[in-house]
Image 1: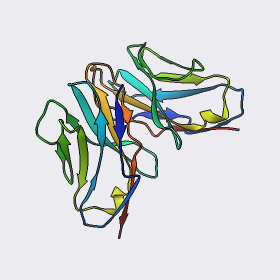
Image 2: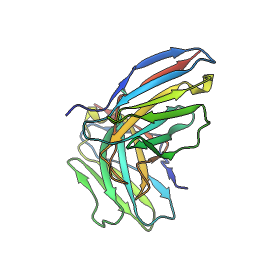
Image 3: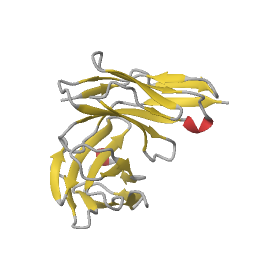
Length: 113
Length: 115
């Protein structure tokens, strides 16, 4: 079975722009979660989508949004980029249960200049 | 809210020896799951081991085992027969049962295995 895939792997943007990151979960997985990893704040939960609905949301500003499609693929969007948004964005998928092991993708490295 | 603390920012171990990574957590929940994830230099987060809080038996996966002390809210990872490929960041993580798939991570421990 193919693992979680994320595209693009690397991205460079400038302040004020917006960006969309994509995540394709493991086949059969219906839950997709997003995390931000930075040297200063560590790993922080952004949000989780299950069956096209946001099931959980972390403590991030409204500039961070996401969605999930009927095939379970998910996108996250960051608008009005700030320098502090530079991070590794990790996507994780799990089957469907309310509590389930998450399997991570390789991440998207976003650099904001 | 839950918090996860890893008190050892960096550790090193000689190849073939045993090392233990510490993790403590704080929660008022009774039902939850605990995980150890490994993140090598490639940055791919890999599941090492999972423990259900309702299970008294400590989880084991080949060379990896945990010491789960629920009352003490402690969840340490023991790596036996350390290998060079074990060099990585190790993250302890907490997930509340029944609340969706949302992990709370510790700050990580950087483990270096020396030849």
